[in-house]
Length: 219
Image 1 (cartoon, rainbow, N blue to C red):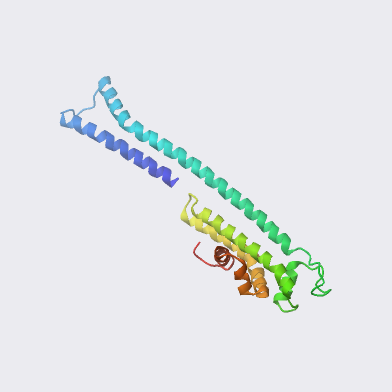
Image 2 (cartoon, rainbow, N blue to C red):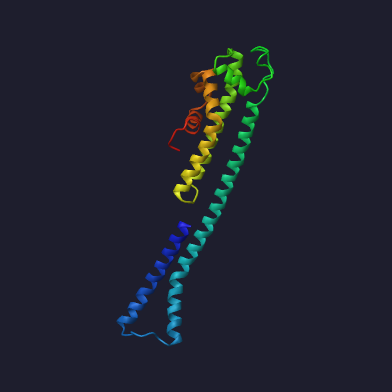
C-alpha cells in the first residue's frame, strides 16, 4: 500500500509538472482566462496525453509487476509455513516414539524418547555411545528445522507490510519454537556433548539453532 501511494504521488506530480509549462506559456502569451474553444482544449489534451501516456504505461506495468511479486511472495510464505508444520509434526512424533530397547534397563523400556532424554540429562540413567548416537541425528534434524525457521522469518521481514508487524510476527514465530523445543534441545546437548553437536551440524545450522532456539538476535 505504501508503494502504491508513492506511485500515485509521483504520477500526480508528473501530471502537474507536465501541465505547468503549458499554462505558463498561455499566461505569458496574454491568455489569462479559461478558453471556451474546443480546439484549445483538444490541443491541451493531446499535449498532456503525449507526455503522461508513457508515464501511465510505466506505472501500470510497475503495478502489475508488484502484484505478481506480492503473489509469488505470498505463495513462498505459504509453502515455507506448510513445510515448517510438517517438520514440527515429524519432530513431535519422533520425541513421543516409544523407546523399545532394554539398553537402559526395563525401567525405561517403552517410555517416550522425550522421557528418556530427560532421564539421561538428569543423570537418572547413563548414556552410552549407542544412546548418544541415537539422539544426535534427532538433534541434527532440529538444527535443520531451525535453519528453515530462520529462512521463514527472513521472508516475513521482507513482506510488504509495516516493519512493526514484521518484527512482531518474527518474534512470535521464534517464541513458539523456543517454548516447544529449546528445553529439550538443551537436554539433548547435555547428553551428547556440545562438541559432538557442533561437529554434527554445519556452521549455518549452528547459527540458526542459536538464533531461533536459544533466543539469539540478529535475524
